[in-house]
Length: 475
Ligand code: FAD
Ligand code: NAI
Image (cartoon, rainbow, N blue to C red; front, side, top):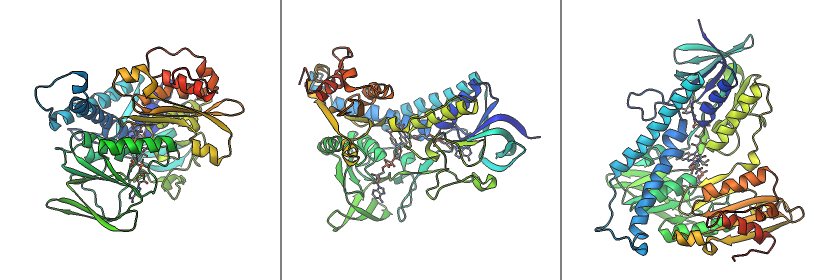
């Protein structure tokens, strides 16, 4: 006898576990299948996906520790805090704390499943068939039937030919979150989000970090002003970033790794390092899903093909998160998970992919929402810009971290806010105001007329809104 549910979710990451909780809240009998043990001591499948186990959460835990370490090394003395010796880092304790945070959160999802009556099925899910208004899925040793299936199988790191990853010396995100010591020399291939965040972690702890990027421009996805400021600051911090390179092979020897590459001028070069991080993007995960068993459309890039509401070509089968188009971000996956559960319940679920905020948790943090200035120029949209540095803000100066700025772009005719770009401390939190404003279709004048608490970093958003109308008060 097969198990029977209204909704079966395949994959227990942010897209999947949130979809399962919402479906259960809406009254459906719901199960969620997950197969990856990640670092579970008993080797049992763990909920939380990439995000909780080997992504967002552990990387932010290490970014926090390494930030404190850098503050202790470089900022305490300026504020009169004296340490009796030079601070040192105990990597094992740092990793232990990170693992504890991960354990707490993954266990927490098990608790949320219990509370919401979601059945956790430990095992790999693969499609078997689609008959009689039911989709048949093999989960581990069991056959499961469901009226609706939500695929949330996420993504995995892309690797490069000629650079085999062993997650000890040559690492993707999994190994790079678990180095047992600080490498003396660390190489990073790819100056994307992982390269910058994890490169920063190990640089702050003392590694000499070289980042090799294939594209000619640094951070081309960000507003050009932000990318320029970020390159200046990261270089000053000690990240050696080379753009326009072409990577060859990597050789692992007794002393570490050597990476052959061609630099931007076409000159052959070699990077010698103790450890190497390969962070060149991620690919959708449909391994062993047997999509063909139900005729599920998968694109050439390996993404499950969906429409704006995450419907696939197979009725009653949806797909959300990293395995479909759009930014590979946990909050985007969660929004889609909720949307699909609500659509299944006959409600009007919606995800606005135009207003998914992006954040890079370096120091300074970088956060944005909406269009960049170069996009508006390309689209021929008339706009007005307001840009205010954190240097003009009392809270930023008082906190000893006045790097960066807030830039707001608004339609020249309607004043509707089209984009907000922040580089500076706490940008990840400040951006929320811009997202709310833009979701409500706010004009820059709306933000300019809203009272912001003083002294806060959010006052720089207020000033940037005033600056759109060329009337800032503190700059
Ligand atoms: P995943 O989290 O990948 O979960 C999919 C799950 O499905 C996995 O657990 C997998 O084991 C399981 N699975 C796959 N196939 C099957 C199957 N056939 N049967 C059963 N189970 C299966 N995003 C942010 O928004 N903010 C951040 O700060 C951030 N930091 C990151 C840092 C790093 C180092 C990395 C690598 C990623 C980071 N991300 C961040 C991206 C974020 O982790 C992903 O966007 C998010 O996890 C996607 O969620 P998902 O549910 O689609 O997929
Ligand atoms: P990425 O797409 O952010 O960056 C990859 C970089 O590698 C790009 O700049 C690309 O041009 C470069 N690259 C590609 N091929 C190359 C090659 N052969 N040689 C040299 N450079 C090459 O991907 P990344 O950093 O691996 O992260 C994957 C995804 O995980 C991100 O896109 C993001 O969606 C998510 N993530 C989100 C975070 C956040 O929200 N703060 C943090 C970390 C990851």
